[in-house]
Image (cartoon, rainbow, N blue to C red; front, side, top):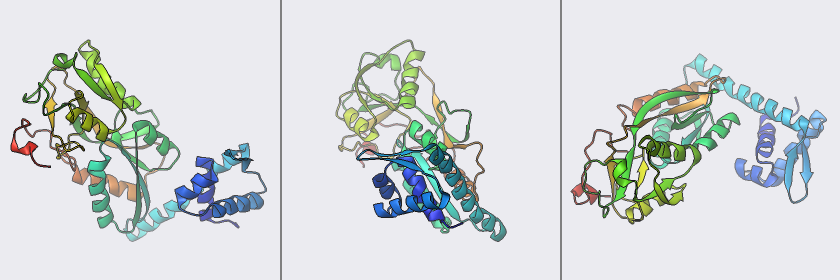
Length: 322
């Protein structure tokens, strides 16, 4: 074999991005190195992998499509050599690519990264953020091994390990008429302006709660950014709903937020780890799953308030801390 695993990884990057420029950015290498790797593979294998379109990137040939799948399998098999060595040496090593759902990534990802990496220094770990749809795509493209996400209509080829169940809360600004309440009914808010977190599956989840009470929210703003949503709500533009309840109860604009349990719709959602059922989990992946089970206990996630903690009103000292 007169090509290297590194050249295969460059080919995979080009095959996934269909762009030499984007592939170079993805693997942090020069564009000529990507082009040289592709040219070498085409010569060595005696096939054309790509059709080059001037100023419009690349497209895979039929042979290139088949070889892209084979290249991914080859890299996966090579990675499993680390697992075999780990089994022999009782040592966790190799690579681990983890995807994290974007709404809770800023809260849990830093602690999971530092804690796991500190314990398993021989594991080369990467993390990527995305929506539920993004993470499913990355799993299927083998860009990530595991996904920290919700159990929201996961397809049959994806398995799920539940780590916690998260309660859904109404979120309001300190000046909202419901801010001094201990809990709230969705029916009381049906005519108030609503700020919707709108990635597809997330959107369906929240709107489904309104359907349970036979109502439709008055949506005044939609956003895919939790940071923007929190600031909009804190500024008094409207109320919203979230399953993520950060320990820091101030929005990014510095204004306080209040999280209220919902009385008339009892709904929680499973949070955990998703992975492709057909793929064998590496020793590093198993170690990460065990570490998450260790850290996430009784529904308490890093950076979030525990579900049983009592809410306080906007004038309570807890609302004055950052």
